[in-house]
Length: 199
Ligand code: GLN
Image (cartoon, rainbow, N blue to C red):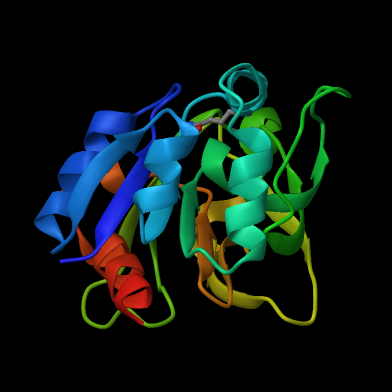
């Protein structure tokens, strides 16, 4: 079983640990650089991205994490985690750091002007069978993707004003979703990530 870390500074860490354990990985919380050194992949959970950015600096994990990502560490970010993996973030605090792991522009709290939180069924590239139930909680969306980035899911037409917005992406072995599969009990997104980590 691959060893997958969940960045455990803030956010819904326990839900991701449980989802990874259900998906065939050994899952551990990561709070220190020595813990980061050991993992084969990392999950950045949902929570609050500017707080997580600050805590990454306080816990002296920002540069070690950037370095491992540059070295090809597989990563999955949900919601706040998506924001942290981006190369550019709109509507954030000027001092918030991000990790540049996916060539994309993300807008924070993007759905807020329409609906703060909502659920929707999505077609998700690489996941067969039933659509994925997506839970959005003050979620970001992706406004631009670079040439190396694959779009995995978009808001369906039935969702009205936000239809077509990009909400899941992949660049190499790094994936990100605007929504929170860790809260629904459907493990297919985590299984996809565990497969990526296995290579
Ligand atoms: N709005 C949060 C942020 O800006 C993300 C919300 C979430 O992770 N559920 O970080």
